[in-house]
Each structure stands twice: as structure tokens, then as C-alpha cells.
Image (cartoon, rainbow, N blue to C red):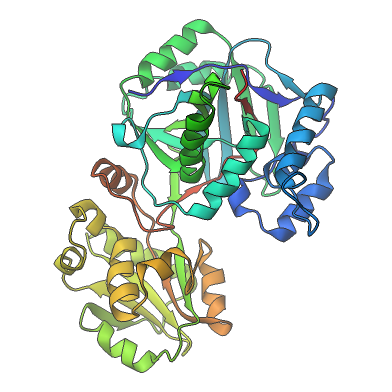
Length: 430
């Protein structure tokens, strides 16, 4: 189903760039203003100048962050700061990282993947997208004709068909090796053997790909190709990072919810109505480090559970009484969608009890998100009216929802770690 292709990727010239960690960034959508400034100051060649340039009050249609990115991109190519691979390649990408003092290693690879209409069922999304981010990415692609950051997708291969080949490659020195500001390790090997290309391509050709991160980038690429298929035929392909769900480093973290700015919010009244739908248990003696364990225990037993925090310095365990209520409130949604913790929270708590419309939720008017449990708890002393701590979504749930043709509520998944931007660029001109 998926068409995976080698390509002559563009990457930083090691003869010009002494320290790779100074020129790469996380994905644009997790970079705030302070981070943007930090990456600008790290190096005059940091990829931030292409991926997320500064906005200025004097910007016009002719001179703006997108036109500046295009001019800088062309300049770096002309000066040899960026160079094109001499031969067609796929790029093995290994990341070492730590979560809660446990070490992980994730292995995947960068490739060009043929764009497919999402309705075709060959490449499946699992989350809704927003108009504004797609417009931003389309403006960037329209000026630069390149993918600076990849779409992150996964496939399912319990046989681990490619892993033995990848292990052989790892015995050789990588073309790129760096440690980022989180002390996570990143290594890239350029795979130029045509026989290995064929094996990878044949392994993936019968696979469905599931988009993990980069839904906005993927939909933008489809629109860009519709507009430019004659001018740039290679825009029929997109830069993707592909990883097997069976890889031991495939980690999905929870994304917690912070509720704020609801006018005339009545905590006592809300607490009473919760009991119509949830078993509510106060967690007076629980320490923050215990909370994830409490949630996991209930998830493992098949229950839908959250931990709610309030301004009264109290934490409560909420256990859904009757799962069928989600289906009743969500006609047309699949059983897989209705089984999601994020769906239960959105449909019953946010929409029914707090009276937040789907439009308000989509625009994040009253809900903020964080993957940091401690940060969520701290907001109760600031602007938060409520917080909800969630379990991580399981890979099997993501596959089931995507296969059913549904899309999860916003911020249902957080794949960790993020992929670095600036390791490999896909030029759409050829």
C-alpha cells in the first residue's frame, strides 16, 4: 500500500558545520518565543531561520518570514552550508532517551513516501487538524518548495523484518551524531545500498501507515501537490520518518488537560453533577509520584479513569460508571473512539457538564494542554479552575480509531521523543 522511496536528501555540510547540535531544533509546533530566540542565537545557520523565522511588524506580502526562509535556504545551498547527498539514500535514525529514569532506544528511518489521499486508506490520520497551522505550513512550502521537517508515521510488523539489517548498519560510524539540550542522543546513517532499499520498500508496500505526528504537514503537502503537480512533480512525495510499532522505543505519553476562564464556574455544583457519571474518590494521601500508577492500575483493569485537581488543593479519582453513555452522547462515532479516555473526558465532562462547545474546545478557548504532570498541578495555584490527569493512549487504540475512519480529540497522543528538525531536508524541486 505505502510507496517508500530513497532520495538524495539535503543535509548540513560537516565541513561547514562543526557542531550539529547548534543547528537543529525540535518541531516548529513545540517552539515558543523564548525557544525561537534561543535557537536563533545558537548559530547563524540554525534551521529555525527556515522552519520558524521571526515575524516583524514591517512584514509585507513581498517580504516576510516565508520569503526570508526561501532566500536563506537558497543562500545556504549556494554557499555549501547545505549539501545534497551524492546517491539516493534512506536515512536510519536512532534516538536514545530517558523517561522516569528508564532508558529507551527508538529506531526508524527517513524516506520519501508517496502522498495518498487520506480517503484511500493507505495512510491514515488519527487526529483533527486546524486551519491556521495548515495555512502557515502551506505558505512556507510555497516559498521554499521543501520539507524541512518530517511527518512521523508508524507501521505494524511483529516479525521485525528490517531490524536485523538495521543492526548491521549500526556497526558502522554514523554520518550524523549529536546530543541535544535534553541530553538525548541522535544518530543518522545514510543507507545507499539499492538492495537494502528494495527490501525496505517491499516490506512496507503492503503496510498501512498511521500518522503519529505531522497531520497538518501531511494535509498541507496534499494541497501543495494539487497546486504544483505540473511545476514540481516530486511534490507527489513527502518526507516521512517511519517506525515499527513493535520497536521497544515506541513511547506514547499522556497529555493532561487544564481548564480555565469559565465564567461563573461553580465548583460545588460541578462536583455534585460529576457523581451522576463517575465514582468520585478523594485522594488525600496520594503523592504526585503515585498518580500515574493509580491511573495505570485502572487502565489495566479496563476502566476509564482520570485524576481531577481543584483549587481546594484536593485530588479526586474519577471512574466512569457506565461506558455506554459515551456512545449515547456521540452518535456516529465508532466503539474505538468512544473507548478513548480523551473522548470520555471531552464528551461527558467538557461538553455535557461544563457546556463547552466542540468549537470552543477546538479553538482551545478554555482548555490548555501539558504533558508535564507537575506543571499541571502547579497551575491550580495560578489560572486553572480544574486539571485532569490522563493515562497515555495505547498504540492499539490509535490504530483502531484510525482504521474505523474516526479522528481522536485534540491532543490525545504525545509521541516521545520528538524528531529533530534539520537532520534531513526533502527538496521538492527534484
